[in-house]
Length: 397
Image (cartoon, rainbow, N blue to C red; front, side, top):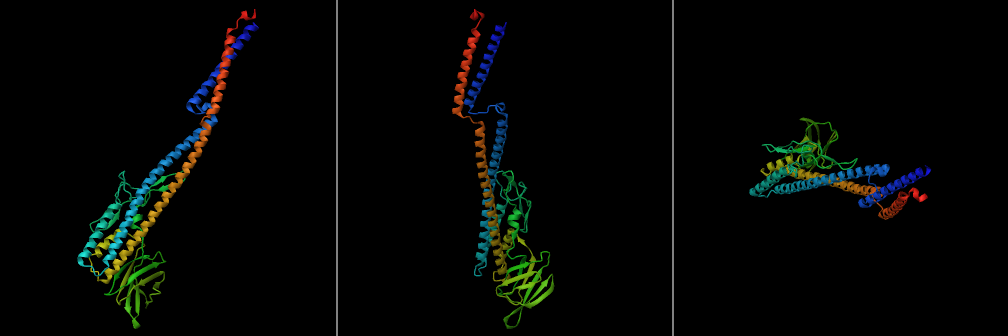
């Protein structure tokens, strides 16, 4: 009886050993075929969970990389459009400067007027550009809304919003891929400070406003300066605030005109009777500058007020050029941010890939050794099983 039990136990033990060895050989074969150390989560639950987390992080990095490509494409289009707008502003400035030439024949002035009109029309078309998806570039976060409309009187109005479209390029960083048309084209820093000058000059006057600022930001008043002749070839001035005279004094070009927080600087040769009206205006619109340039192009350039206003428009176009150049530089900064994030993602992705490789990838040399060892062990178990299977009671007689 003991012999029967012992024989059955030996038989079962050898059979179990064969099954274990077959499983090992099968595991080795599958690993060699796939090149992976982990075939199922059951092979190493802790390592499998870690590998899953790393794989999810790689997918997140891939999505960020795709977003960076999209953002870069949009910013490149945005940069080109702003560069074209810069060129329009510079061309308009040069054309207006040529209008100041008093020796121009009427037909030449008309040609310049047509040139400015063409620039204004093309500039408006530029500001209403569409991308390849049919979205307006400069409408803020309202991509299906045409941003700029010109009325019958030549005034241009903005219909977009003030916001930017942002794309998330990392866990903590978003990059703006556009700028609103209002910010780019209608909120240009006034080159004359806090006021818009309006000239009423005498014949032969060369008076121009250099700068007019006010430290009292809550002061909404309109100021007017009138110059009168004084003794010894000097000039007095009368400063009015909303129609009421608030100061009279002799004019000193080196000191300018100061009243409370107002500081007015004047340049050029004065004439008695010259008047400048200053209306509060901290920003200008390039569309208004185009409109004003077209209107002035038809005036007599010998008129001192027209000449002063042409100088004013020239300065406004120059301010627009500087403003757009700065905006384009900001776009370049955003592009640099994309480049930096892309490099960081690539470095992190490489680190993750190395970690995944150490967890998942098979060491082929070691795997072949294990496969050979397990194959030999399986063969030994099979031989042992054959011997146990052939044993009968007659072997003990």
